[in-house]
Length: 112
Length: 121
Image (cartoon, rainbow over all chains, first blue to last red; front, side, top):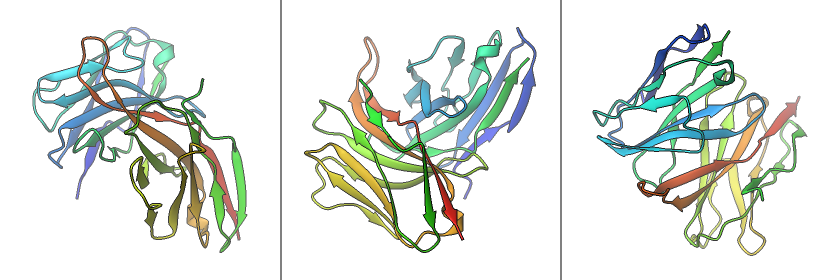
């Protein structure tokens, strides 16, 4: 009954460091998404994928990269961490574009 | 213009009473969907209820119902018989069809600012 699993749950990075946020889902969903949630705000879409090998930019893609080599996995990479990327990151998946998105528990990332 | 507007930053309700959380939206897509998510203090996003733009009846899921008024572009969440565990942030979201330039069409989900609900014993 895993659903969408994100790792790590918490991370502190120094400015300029890089890291990969992992996301995997076991529901065989085609669509996967990465969002960020800044304090007191709703979620904003970073990148999305409609299937293995296909990724596209969302509203706020700058400073991030993604890949989708399998249906299950959709990692998010930060190449040069900046304080503005301090946020909570959510991965989500859905069976199709008009089905509800199911979210992971989030990764709380601080850049110092 | 805001796509999704939640005008209530915070709401208070007595345990066992009903509460309505407001949501208005703006779209030109005739085929859209409206979602409500709950975010407790632990941080996860929990899907509550969905209403499609062509659905004739208001959606219901247990104690949750969606008061969908298409002409007024509102999709309010009604929680009946509030429980202490209902205290959380609630987000309204709208799904529209969207194709970015040179990209792949997908259901773009836009979130409102959220409403913090506090249930008093």
